[in-house]
Length: 151
Image (cartoon, rainbow, N blue to C red; front, side, top):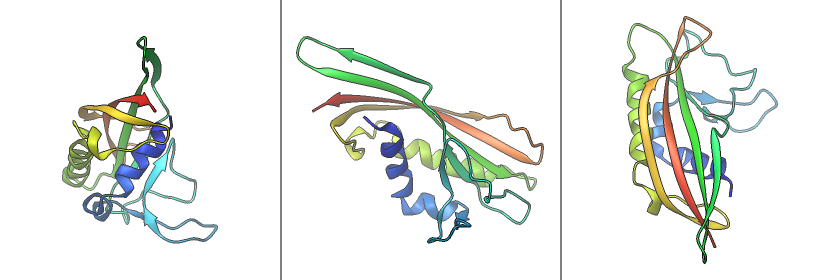
């Protein structure tokens, strides 16, 4: 089951969240969209003092555990959603974004969908600080634990 697609769909489908995020237009063309990326931001997306809104990165899976009972198959996926912003003297914008991400996933299994299964549990930890290589950027991360039951 594709937890990246589940997470992306939930994040990108929330107009409150996408209004809080930077926008991204691919250099190769295409429509502008909210700055939500998988694993890393593309080279043509630049965080700078001109970019006043954060971006989100759905990190690579931390863990994927198959589980089963005699009659049902399950998978447990542990993921992170990381937020980054150019530090302009305040973390308020990034903190607001990350609290919205928490709201979208904490005990929200009924609102999540996955191809080939059902989300039976959704738990969140954080947000906590997330280190960056660039001292001009600030980072936050939340941990997600999603439990899927195969159809």
